[in-house]
Image 1 (tube, one colour):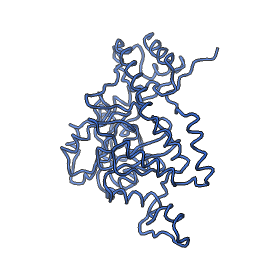
Image 2: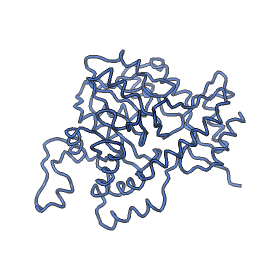
Image 3: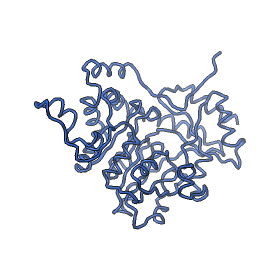
Length: 379
């Protein structure tokens, strides 16, 4: 018999995505073009914003968002200490200063109460991360710190919402990811969202080398000799039309994907509540979770195994797991230059050491979930 292997994540694609690639391939327009424009339009509508701009990935989205927000060298930008490293890296790209804030271990999101002690005269922006698909409390941040630019790291949060308002529409700019571990994917890819027309124009220019006109205008206009002006230094952060075609199909499936994930997250919560050493995720009232991941927390004081040993045992049983993400303040690129100790952010440290993500994706069967629960209970 073949050994059972349940992946931590797997993209859900089918014949619709395969067929969607025909149009850009047959038309010959495979770089940013009409398919990307259509994807942007539908994404903006789904996420309740006026403008959506597709880019090469969420890291480049974060970089552009900071530039469009006017972040300058030496400016301070707040971010949670427990997030993917690209949140901090994008700040460094701007020669700004990342200022870490501890998290609330109940949600894995930034601890609102811990923000105030990190504010200084140089603080210009904050990046609340909607980790694993659960929105950070952006409304509370806006109310407490109306002078700060709010850039949502919504990499995990396509389709998520806070009190009925979509992720990506809560702050000044939203940044999404379409990496294969996300609920919808274009392979690589990202999206910027905003309701500010001036910011949208800046983002559009910066993602395309700093060009004053779009590729569509240049190629389809009546003046073949027309070249764009380049008054600012920009970047090649564009999405291809092949990715746009995939994104259009995936976006139509987003709500069904989330509903299925939410159903199995509820199953996990119900079945695993009898395990005293396993903290399961909670969803506060008024929040719509995007369920990019199902992340638990291990209490090693009473658990039968240490977190890492438990993950190895699950791997032997054919169940892939991962830590939730990492505590960026513990990584060498940040700990050493900034003189940060692991204990400086105790909740982020705990999440780094004791979190465990269980498989949750749209290619799993009922038998997979039942098997995972049975193995966990066997410990």
